[in-house]
Image (cartoon, rainbow over all chains, first blue to last red; front, top):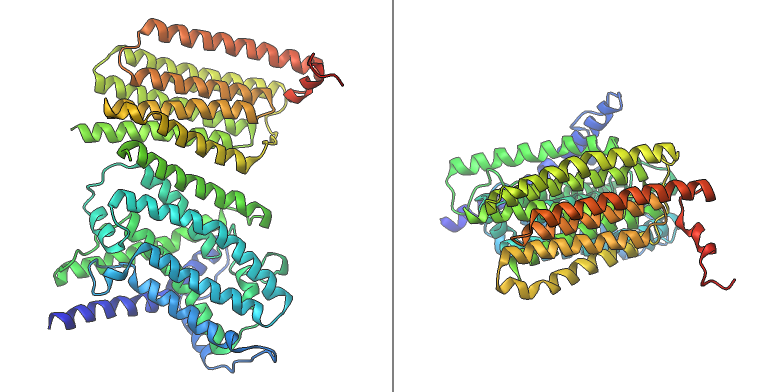
Length: 318
Length: 220
C-alpha cells in the first residue's frame, strides 16, 4: 500500500511537469507581449499549437536518416526524465535517490547532443550553423553549471537534489555569499540553456541570430510538437531547479501528510508562475547579444561560480 | 552567536572580493568609479561589523573614514575629473578581458592557499587575511591591465581597501598607523590627480601607453 502511494506521488510529479509546461510558456509569451503593448496570444495557445502539430502530417526531407526521426522522441524523453526527477512539490519521492544534480546535467547533455545531431542530419546550412552555435554555447555553459553543482554540493555535502532541498528548506545553512553567487551564475546558465534573450531569441526567424530555431527548422508535424514540448519542459525544469535549490520554501519533506503535500504543490505552482512572469520582464529590459559576446556573458557566470567555490574553501578549509 | 558573526563577516568581505572582480570586468570608466564607491561602502560595513564583534570602538572611526572619504569624496572627485577630461562616456579597452578574469581567479586561489597555515591558529583571521590579500592582488592586477590613468588610480585605491580590510581583521592595528595610511593614500591621490592633468596637457590623452616613447631604456 505504501509503495502504491509512493508510486502515485511520483506519477503526480511526472504528469504535473508535462501538464504545466505549455501553460508556463504561454504565460511568459503573454507577459512579454503585454510588456511590448501587444495583446499577445492566449495563455493556453501552446496547448492548441501542440494539438494542431500532433495532427498534422510530418514532412521528412528526402535525405533524412533514422537519426532525424528518432531525435525528437529522444530529446523529449531525456528532458522529461530530468524534469520528473527534480523535486518540485515534495522531496523524498520514490525515485528521488536517482535525482542527482550531475545526472540531470548529463541527461540534458544527452538531449542537446541528439538535437545537434538532428540539426546536422539533413545537411542544410542552417541546421549546421545552429548545431555549431549550440555546441559553442554548451561548451561554455556546462563548466559553469558543473561549478554551480560543486558549490551546492560543498554547502550541502551531497549532490542529491532531494537531500539538498530538504537541508536548504530548514534554513540551517545560514547566510552564504557563495549561494548568492551560485544563483547569479545559475540564472546566466539557465538563460543560455533555454535559448532566451540575450543569448537567443525563441521567437526569431531571422537567419543571422537563430540558434535553437535554426536546428529545428526542418521539423514539422508530430516531430516538431515533441521538440516544442521538450523546450517548454526544459524551461519548467530550470524553474524547478531554481525553486528547489534557492527558494525551497514550502516544499513538503519526506513522508509528509496530505496537508503538507497540498501546501507544497501550491507553493510550487506559485513559484513557477512567478518565475514565468519575471523571465519576460528581464528579457524585455536587455538587448540581444552578438554571437561573439557569448563567451564574455557565460565567462562571467563561470567566474562567479568559481568564486563561489573558492569562498567556500576559505570558510571551510580543505 | 558566533556562527552568525562569522557568516556576516564572510558575507561582507566576500562581497568586497566580488566587487573587485566587477572592477576588473567593467569597461565603462564612470561605472568603474561607481563600483569602487560600492566597494568602499562594503569595506566600511565590514570594518563596522569588526568593531562590533571585536568590541573596538576605534574601528568605528576607521569605518566612518572609509565611508566618507572613499565612499563619497574620492568617487565624487574622480567623477569630476573624468567630466573635466571629457572621458566620462568612454569605454576603455581592457587588455585581455577573459584571461584577466582567469588570472584573477588564480590570484584568489593563491591567496587562499597562502593563508592556509594561519587557519590552524585562528579561523576568523585566516578568512579575513585571505580575502584582504585577494583584494590587494586584484587591485594590483587592475593597475597592470588598465591603460587609462584614471582607472589605474581606481585600482590603486581598491588595493588600499584590501590593506584596511587586512588591518582590521588582525587585532591591534593602532589608529595612528591607519590614519597615516589613509593620509598617504590621499597624498597619492592628489599626486595622481596632478599627474593625470599634466599628462593630459602634454599628450592630449590619459592613455599611459603614450608615455612609452619617453622612457629612457627604449633604444628606438
